[in-house]
Every structure is written in structure tokens, then in C-alpha cells.
Length: 457
Image 1 (cartoon, one colour):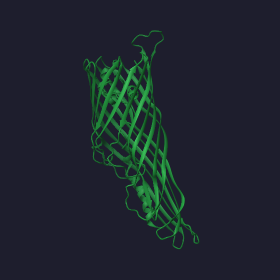
Image 2 (image 1 turned 120 degrees about the vertical axis):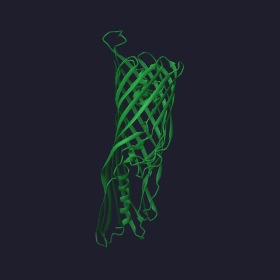
Image 3 (image 1 turned 135 degrees about the vertical axis):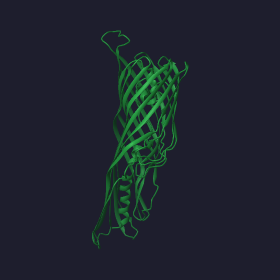
Image 4 (image 1 turned 90 degrees about the vertical axis):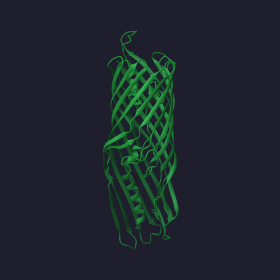
């Protein structure tokens, strides 16, 4: 039993154990929160006046004149990912590769927000937002094939990689919006955060000489499961200023600070050779995850969101927005981040007091500086669009309800996007276990229907 395939399997298991932080390195806005944001691709920094303002610009809460309770969800999402030639095995210079494919369907309860106006100029709100949710399940198999090893023997080899990942993150906390003067609003929000990521991997490699005069077979297996969590704190402050023919908005989000973190799990690698001229050999190795030291570590960069909204009609607008984040060095919980700028353009148009339509385009470029170490870790820039409709239904038992009647607002929209970038690939080389920088060019796709429901009282 050569030690090289066993070391290769140790590298696979060790990479997983060392990198749960890769699951937290997703892009900044995988979902939109609130009805207006879902209609307009998140272009609500200057114009937003609904519960989604708790996330995009808490100053918008200062323009809420009535209370509301809203619950929104991407009813289901479809993410399609293919990493070409991601899993490779090389024997004496001969290489075989296999694509990793994932077609994942997930359901996301993206936001629950309650807001109430304390007066005509002051509104308070509280909410729970699912700001990250991802599932990935993929299986890669290199079917049995014949190769020549470094000693010149013909061998029959095959391998298999089964990987599953599940990550989520939540923001929860209060917000306050104040109208200082007609058309001038400020707002503040404070969020506690909680993130959890679980990764599972199973890897198996087997090979045997083609000439089985003396039966011989070798196996290598690696299995790992790691769950990482952290809790943190972040805040935001915002301004909205209506200037008649134009409205301006600005939101400053603080960097997120981790307060505590933990890692659980580990990896087991085994190697076995049976038969042949030599004695049977069996190896066993355990690897524990890195310890997390998180207190005071910055895990998410601060951001500046700016928007300019142009009125189109009553309660209708076109908004152009920009979103900039600074960089961060690599830490115990997250990989290094680089500065990035994204843009959004969206329009909301009221067809009648009961019907609103909207649409928009957005970018969500990655700010990870480098790829993670484990196969399927990705650095992808997303571009997409949204389109949808919103229906307001007064909840009253008479034909012409008064203005203070309860109103049910139902919003249906669709977010579709494509991501372009690179994903980590892995090569198991039975002749050379030197570190490699393998990667694949990828294109991912996603479709996220959104269903929002709120009651205005």
C-alpha cells in the first residue's frame, strides 16, 4: 500500500476540517427583503417606505404612517451548479476527471418584520431576516479504468466523492425611523447575527493490479463532518431626503463583529491493502477541526449603500443605486475580502390603488480574495433581474372601506440570476502529492420565486 494515496485522502479530509469558514463566504445579497425590494431588485435605499427598510435603509421607516406586520419568503429556490473536471485522479501521468453537478431546491423564510408608528414622525420596528441560506449536494464518480502505476504495473482504479453542505445566517433586532422635517428622515438599526454551516464529505479510492495471479487490492477512505457556528453584532444608520423631483438615500452599515464561535466534528482517514506478496496493511488517522477564536474579529466588511430615486407617478419611482464594501484580512472565521462595488436599478409603478408592478436588474459580485481550499469552494459574480406584481386588498365588509381599514398586501415576484467565476477542483495524484492550485471555470444559475404577505393596520 503506497502512502501517497493515503496522504491524498488525508488532504481531502483535512481541507474540509480546516475550512467551514468557506461556507460563510457567499455573496452579500442572495435574497431581497420586503415587497418593494423584491419588485425592484433591492433598489429602495432612497425610496423604500415598507418593512424592508429595516434592512436597506432604516430611515425609510420614518415615512411609515401606519403599522404593519409582514412575512416574506422565497417559496422555493432552484440553484444549478456544475463544476467541470472538478474531481481528478492521476496515475503515472495519466489523468481522468469527472464533473460535479448539483441541482438543489431550497425553501427560505427570508424575513418577518413588524413595524408600528408611535407618532406621525416616529416608527419602530423589529425583525428576523434569513440573510443567507444554501444547500449543496453533489456526487462525483470516476468509473473503473486501467492505468499504469509508477512501478510499471497495470492497475484498475476508481474513486468516488460524496459531498453535502448546509449553511444559514440570521439577522435579528430592532430599528427606529424618525422624520426630522417634511421629506427628511433618519433611521438606525441594530442586529444580532447567528451563522451556522455544516459540511459532510465521504471519499473512497480503490485500485488493484490487473494481473491478479496473486490477488491484491487497496482501499483508501476519508469521511468528515464539521459544524461551525458564530454569533455577532452589526448596526446600520440611514438618511433619506426628498427634494421634490428627486429623492436621495444613504445607508452606512458597520462591519460585523463576531462575539463567539465554535467548531465541532472531525475527519477520519483509513487505508488498507490486502493480498499480494506482503503483509496486510491497515492505517487509521483522525483529524480535529481548527479551534475558533472569534471575540472582536471582523467577519463581514462595512458597506455604503446610496440611491437616487426619480418619481414617475404617485407612489411610483425609478431608482438607481450603488453598494460599496471595503476589504478585510483573513481571520479565524472568514477568508480575506477585497473591496467590491455593486449596482442596482429598479422601478415600481402603481397601476391603480390596488395594483403595483415592478422590475429591476442587479449585480452581486463576490468579494472573496482567493478561492477556498476544498473542492466546490467557489468565487462567483452574480448578475440578474427581478419582476413582479403586488396586490392590495382592503379587509372590510362594506363596498367602500374607510382609509383606516386593514389592508392585505400580497406580492409575487421572481428573481433570476447567473453567476460567473471559478470553483476549486481537486486532483488525487498517486505519484506526486505536492500542493496544487486546481480550479475550474464555472457558470451557475438560480431561480428564486418570492411570495410576500403583509397586513397594514
